[in-house]
Amino acid sequence: MLTNTALLQQAGLPVTDLGPVIAGERHPLLFATVSGAHLYGFPSRDSDVDLRGVHVLPAEDLVGLREPEETRSRMWDSDEGVEMDLVTHDLRKFVRLMLKPNGYVLEQLLSPLVVHTSALHAELVALSPAVLTRNHAHHYRGFANTQWRLFEKTGELKPLLYTFRALLTGIHLMRSGEVLAHLPTRVPAPSYLPGLITAKAAAEHGGADGVDAEAVVRDVESLHRVLDGAQAESGLPDGASGFDALHELVVRARLTHVPAG
Image 1 (cartoon, one colour):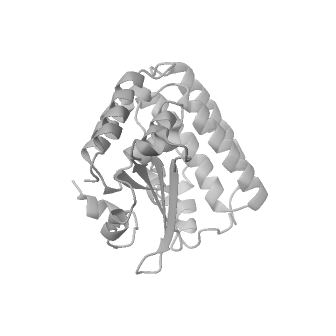
Image 2 (cartoon, helix red, strand yellow; image 1 turned 90 degrees about the vertical axis):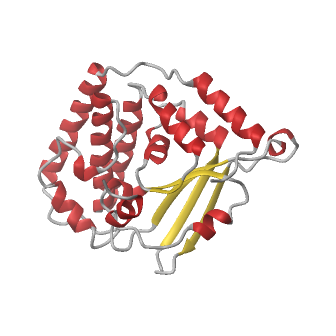
């Protein structure tokens, strides 16, 4: 089994010490993971690094008059000149998103590309199966439609790959109950996808030159039908069941001012 460092390197991430960044956060972080193209398996040489995670605000930030800083964002360049982007939500906001059919936050939580973790991160991961529903298919269908429209407008490979990634992730989730966002390992997938991934590695906003437009339209429409069928046949429940356990976790984390590590 690969170590976490090896996983990060295999995903094409720069070797950089994020310790000072984590330590510099004003509020404790429960976790920080890599999302975006590196998680999805098709980063470009000039891709930035998308870090996503959860922070814990002190209780007084939520009971006073000032608006709480539920979402924080930082951007900087690594020593290698790679743009880094860290976005974190307060635990309560993140858990509320978990309880919706929102595959994006679950991909962040369950990302194998972990740069910072904690005991409460592990608890959230353990509770994640209780929020998976067949309605998560709507999230992936909607995201695929948005990216497809962007592909039609720009002709870039990136939104085309995001379209396929969303549809295949949704199909896998409906069939297996597992959130797995890595496009190269998804099946069934069109045979030309590896070539598109290789082409995108050259430039983050490269065009989809040479793509068989008719084949792409046919395959995207086919995958939409497969997703519809997988949702109809899925053994996942219609609604989340983890509310009470997640509520208890949020209260406990807030009142004990959980440490960062």
